[in-house]
Length: 264
Image 1 (spheres, rainbow, N blue to C red):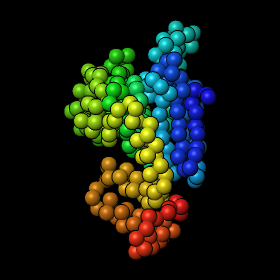
Image 2 (image 1 turned 60 degrees about the vertical axis):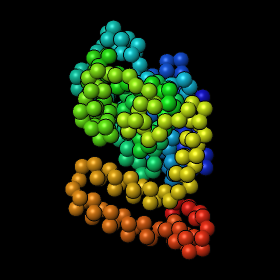
Image 3 (image 1 turned 90 degrees about the horizontal axis):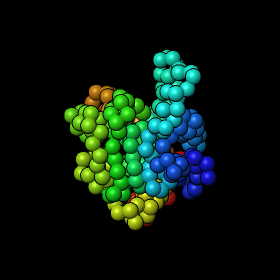
Image 4 (image 1 turned 90 degrees about the vertical axis):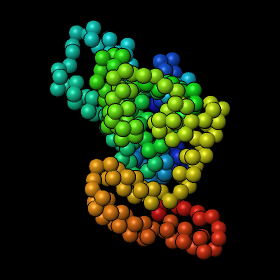
Protein backbone atom coordinates (compact mmCIF):
# COMPACT_ATOMS: atom_id res chain seq x y z
CA UNK A 1 0.00 0.00 0.00
CA UNK A 2 1.32 3.46 -0.91
CA UNK A 3 1.12 6.51 1.37
CA UNK A 4 -2.24 7.24 -0.26
CA UNK A 5 -4.39 4.24 -1.12
CA UNK A 6 -7.58 4.41 -3.17
CA UNK A 7 -9.86 1.37 -3.29
CA UNK A 8 -13.18 1.34 -5.14
CA UNK A 9 -15.81 -1.31 -4.49
CA UNK A 10 -19.59 -1.36 -4.94
CA UNK A 11 -19.75 2.36 -5.64
CA UNK A 12 -17.71 3.33 -2.57
CA UNK A 13 -14.27 4.91 -2.99
CA UNK A 14 -12.20 4.48 0.17
CA UNK A 15 -9.21 6.82 0.25
CA UNK A 16 -6.78 6.01 3.07
CA UNK A 17 -3.89 8.19 4.19
CA UNK A 18 -1.27 5.56 4.96
CA UNK A 19 1.71 6.94 6.81
CA UNK A 20 0.96 5.64 10.32
CA UNK A 21 4.54 5.97 11.60
CA UNK A 22 4.06 9.77 11.31
CA UNK A 23 0.38 9.78 12.38
CA UNK A 24 -0.45 10.17 8.67
CA UNK A 25 1.18 13.60 8.47
CA UNK A 26 1.20 14.86 4.89
CA UNK A 27 4.32 15.71 2.90
CA UNK A 28 4.10 18.13 -0.01
CA UNK A 29 4.35 15.26 -2.48
CA UNK A 30 1.42 13.57 -0.73
CA UNK A 31 -0.71 16.71 -1.02
CA UNK A 32 -0.17 16.74 -4.78
CA UNK A 33 -1.05 13.04 -4.98
CA UNK A 34 -4.17 13.60 -2.86
CA UNK A 35 -5.44 16.28 -5.23
CA UNK A 36 -4.88 13.95 -8.21
CA UNK A 37 -6.74 11.07 -6.54
CA UNK A 38 -9.65 13.32 -5.57
CA UNK A 39 -9.88 14.63 -9.15
CA UNK A 40 -9.94 11.03 -10.37
CA UNK A 41 -12.65 10.12 -7.89
CA UNK A 42 -14.77 13.17 -8.68
CA UNK A 43 -14.84 12.30 -12.39
CA UNK A 44 -15.43 8.55 -11.93
CA UNK A 45 -19.11 7.84 -12.59
CA UNK A 46 -18.81 4.45 -10.90
CA UNK A 47 -18.08 6.16 -7.57
CA UNK A 48 -21.21 7.18 -5.69
CA UNK A 49 -19.65 7.94 -2.29
CA UNK A 50 -16.15 8.81 -1.05
CA UNK A 51 -14.80 7.76 2.36
CA UNK A 52 -11.69 9.57 3.57
CA UNK A 53 -9.83 7.99 6.48
CA UNK A 54 -6.37 7.28 7.88
CA UNK A 55 -4.44 4.14 8.69
CA UNK A 56 -4.60 3.34 12.41
CA UNK A 57 -3.83 4.86 14.83
CA UNK A 58 -4.57 8.29 13.28
CA UNK A 59 -6.77 10.12 10.80
CA UNK A 60 -4.29 12.81 9.77
CA UNK A 61 -1.96 14.94 11.91
CA UNK A 62 -1.81 17.64 9.24
CA UNK A 63 1.35 18.80 7.51
CA UNK A 64 4.70 17.17 8.21
CA UNK A 65 6.40 19.53 10.69
CA UNK A 66 9.77 17.81 10.28
CA UNK A 67 9.62 18.56 6.56
CA UNK A 68 8.81 22.18 7.42
CA UNK A 69 12.00 22.39 9.50
CA UNK A 70 14.06 20.70 6.79
CA UNK A 71 12.75 23.23 4.28
CA UNK A 72 13.75 26.12 6.55
CA UNK A 73 17.27 24.69 6.81
CA UNK A 74 17.56 24.21 3.06
CA UNK A 75 19.54 26.38 0.70
CA UNK A 76 16.53 27.53 -1.29
CA UNK A 77 13.53 29.10 0.35
CA UNK A 78 10.69 29.64 -2.10
CA UNK A 79 9.56 33.19 -2.68
CA UNK A 80 6.36 34.37 -1.06
CA UNK A 81 4.53 34.03 -4.38
CA UNK A 82 5.92 30.55 -5.02
CA UNK A 83 4.86 29.41 -1.55
CA UNK A 84 1.41 30.93 -1.98
CA UNK A 85 0.90 29.22 -5.34
CA UNK A 86 1.99 25.85 -3.92
CA UNK A 87 -0.41 26.08 -0.99
CA UNK A 88 -3.27 27.17 -3.24
CA UNK A 89 -2.67 24.16 -5.46
CA UNK A 90 -2.66 21.71 -2.55
CA UNK A 91 -5.79 23.27 -1.05
CA UNK A 92 -7.68 22.15 -4.13
CA UNK A 93 -8.17 18.96 -2.05
CA UNK A 94 -10.60 20.77 0.24
CA UNK A 95 -12.54 22.28 -2.65
CA UNK A 96 -12.90 18.89 -4.29
CA UNK A 97 -14.13 17.23 -1.10
CA UNK A 98 -16.65 20.02 -0.61
CA UNK A 99 -17.85 20.39 -4.19
CA UNK A 100 -17.63 17.02 -5.95
CA UNK A 101 -21.15 15.91 -6.91
CA UNK A 102 -21.22 12.94 -4.54
CA UNK A 103 -21.31 12.58 -0.74
CA UNK A 104 -17.98 12.64 1.10
CA UNK A 105 -17.57 11.03 4.52
CA UNK A 106 -14.59 11.51 6.87
CA UNK A 107 -14.08 8.51 9.17
CA UNK A 108 -11.94 9.78 12.04
CA UNK A 109 -10.26 6.99 13.96
CA UNK A 110 -7.56 8.91 15.85
CA UNK A 111 -5.50 12.11 15.74
CA UNK A 112 -7.17 14.76 13.57
CA UNK A 113 -5.13 17.95 13.57
CA UNK A 114 -4.17 20.98 11.50
CA UNK A 115 -4.75 20.51 7.80
CA UNK A 116 -6.07 17.03 8.58
CA UNK A 117 -8.77 18.67 10.69
CA UNK A 118 -9.52 21.02 7.78
CA UNK A 119 -9.88 18.06 5.38
CA UNK A 120 -12.37 16.43 7.73
CA UNK A 121 -14.35 19.68 7.91
CA UNK A 122 -14.42 19.84 4.09
CA UNK A 123 -16.31 16.55 3.91
CA UNK A 124 -20.10 16.45 3.93
CA UNK A 125 -20.29 14.10 6.90
CA UNK A 126 -17.97 13.19 9.78
CA UNK A 127 -18.04 10.00 11.81
CA UNK A 128 -15.55 9.68 14.67
CA UNK A 129 -14.38 7.39 17.40
CA UNK A 130 -15.35 8.81 20.79
CA UNK A 131 -11.68 8.69 21.78
CA UNK A 132 -10.34 10.39 18.63
CA UNK A 133 -8.24 13.48 19.38
CA UNK A 134 -9.01 16.76 17.61
CA UNK A 135 -7.16 20.08 17.49
CA UNK A 136 -6.78 22.87 14.96
CA UNK A 137 -3.05 22.86 15.93
CA UNK A 138 -2.03 25.81 13.70
CA UNK A 139 -1.21 28.13 16.61
CA UNK A 140 1.21 25.51 17.96
CA UNK A 141 3.41 25.90 14.87
CA UNK A 142 2.75 29.66 14.48
CA UNK A 143 0.67 29.13 11.35
CA UNK A 144 -2.53 30.96 10.45
CA UNK A 145 -4.34 27.92 9.05
CA UNK A 146 -5.12 26.56 5.61
CA UNK A 147 -7.22 24.10 3.61
CA UNK A 148 -10.37 26.13 4.32
CA UNK A 149 -10.55 25.21 7.99
CA UNK A 150 -11.45 28.71 9.16
CA UNK A 151 -14.33 28.84 6.66
CA UNK A 152 -15.66 25.33 7.29
CA UNK A 153 -15.37 25.50 11.08
CA UNK A 154 -17.09 28.91 11.23
CA UNK A 155 -20.01 27.44 9.28
CA UNK A 156 -20.21 24.41 11.57
CA UNK A 157 -19.77 25.86 15.08
CA UNK A 158 -20.08 29.63 14.57
CA UNK A 159 -17.35 32.22 14.33
CA UNK A 160 -16.81 32.77 18.06
CA UNK A 161 -16.23 29.09 18.83
CA UNK A 162 -14.14 28.64 15.70
CA UNK A 163 -11.86 31.51 16.74
CA UNK A 164 -11.48 30.02 20.21
CA UNK A 165 -10.46 26.65 18.75
CA UNK A 166 -7.95 28.33 16.43
CA UNK A 167 -6.42 30.85 18.85
CA UNK A 168 -5.95 28.39 21.72
CA UNK A 169 -5.53 25.18 19.65
CA UNK A 170 -7.65 23.47 22.29
CA UNK A 171 -7.69 19.68 22.15
CA UNK A 172 -10.95 17.76 22.39
CA UNK A 173 -12.21 14.20 21.97
CA UNK A 174 -14.58 12.70 19.44
CA UNK A 175 -17.28 12.65 22.09
CA UNK A 176 -16.80 16.37 22.70
CA UNK A 177 -16.72 16.96 18.95
CA UNK A 178 -20.16 15.39 18.67
CA UNK A 179 -21.53 17.65 21.41
CA UNK A 180 -20.18 20.73 19.55
CA UNK A 181 -21.56 19.57 16.21
CA UNK A 182 -18.07 19.16 14.75
CA UNK A 183 -18.87 15.52 13.90
CA UNK A 184 -22.25 14.06 13.02
CA UNK A 185 -21.81 11.08 15.29
CA UNK A 186 -19.23 9.64 17.69
CA UNK A 187 -19.16 5.89 18.35
CA UNK A 188 -16.89 3.47 20.18
CA UNK A 189 -13.67 2.46 18.48
CA UNK A 190 -15.05 -1.06 18.03
CA UNK A 191 -18.15 0.28 16.27
CA UNK A 192 -16.41 2.75 13.97
CA UNK A 193 -15.68 0.48 11.00
CA UNK A 194 -19.11 -1.17 10.97
CA UNK A 195 -21.00 2.12 11.25
CA UNK A 196 -18.78 3.72 8.59
CA UNK A 197 -19.42 0.79 6.25
CA UNK A 198 -23.15 1.04 6.88
CA UNK A 199 -23.22 4.77 6.14
CA UNK A 200 -21.06 4.40 3.01
CA UNK A 201 -23.14 1.52 1.70
CA UNK A 202 -26.38 3.42 2.27
CA UNK A 203 -25.01 6.49 0.48
CA UNK A 204 -23.69 4.43 -2.44
CA UNK A 205 -26.99 2.59 -2.80
CA UNK A 206 -28.98 5.82 -2.69
CA UNK A 207 -30.17 8.15 -5.48
CA UNK A 208 -26.73 9.52 -6.32
CA UNK A 209 -27.91 12.01 -8.95
CA UNK A 210 -30.29 13.51 -6.40
CA UNK A 211 -27.50 13.47 -3.82
CA UNK A 212 -25.41 15.58 -6.17
CA UNK A 213 -28.25 18.08 -6.57
CA UNK A 214 -28.77 18.14 -2.78
CA UNK A 215 -25.10 18.92 -2.30
CA UNK A 216 -25.17 21.77 -4.80
CA UNK A 217 -28.24 23.21 -3.01
CA UNK A 218 -26.51 23.13 0.37
CA UNK A 219 -23.32 24.63 -1.07
CA UNK A 220 -25.30 27.49 -2.61
CA UNK A 221 -27.17 28.02 0.68
CA UNK A 222 -23.85 28.74 2.41
CA UNK A 223 -23.60 32.15 0.73
CA UNK A 224 -26.66 32.93 -1.41
CA UNK A 225 -30.00 34.57 -0.74
CA UNK A 226 -33.16 32.58 -0.06
CA UNK A 227 -34.47 33.53 -3.51
CA UNK A 228 -31.33 32.20 -5.21
CA UNK A 229 -31.65 28.92 -3.30
CA UNK A 230 -35.37 28.65 -4.14
CA UNK A 231 -34.57 29.16 -7.83
CA UNK A 232 -31.88 26.47 -7.81
CA UNK A 233 -34.01 24.06 -5.79
CA UNK A 234 -36.77 24.40 -8.40
CA UNK A 235 -34.35 23.64 -11.23
CA UNK A 236 -32.71 20.72 -9.45
CA UNK A 237 -36.03 19.22 -8.37
CA UNK A 238 -37.26 19.39 -11.97
CA UNK A 239 -34.04 17.66 -13.08
CA UNK A 240 -34.47 15.03 -10.36
CA UNK A 241 -37.98 14.23 -11.62
CA UNK A 242 -36.45 13.30 -14.98
CA UNK A 243 -34.07 10.67 -13.60
CA UNK A 244 -34.51 6.91 -13.80
CA UNK A 245 -33.97 6.78 -10.04
CA UNK A 246 -37.02 8.99 -9.45
CA UNK A 247 -39.17 6.77 -11.67
CA UNK A 248 -37.93 3.69 -9.80
CA UNK A 249 -38.56 5.30 -6.40
CA UNK A 250 -42.09 6.35 -7.32
CA UNK A 251 -42.97 2.88 -8.59
CA UNK A 252 -41.39 1.24 -5.55
CA UNK A 253 -43.43 3.47 -3.26
CA UNK A 254 -46.70 2.44 -4.94
CA UNK A 255 -45.65 -1.22 -4.99
CA UNK A 256 -44.55 -1.06 -1.34
CA UNK A 257 -41.03 -2.33 -1.98
CA UNK A 258 -37.48 -1.02 -1.51
CA UNK A 259 -36.25 0.91 -4.57
CA UNK A 260 -33.09 -0.16 -6.40
CA UNK A 261 -31.22 2.94 -7.50
CA UNK A 262 -28.73 2.93 -10.39
CA UNK A 263 -27.48 6.49 -10.18
CA UNK A 264 -29.17 7.50 -13.43
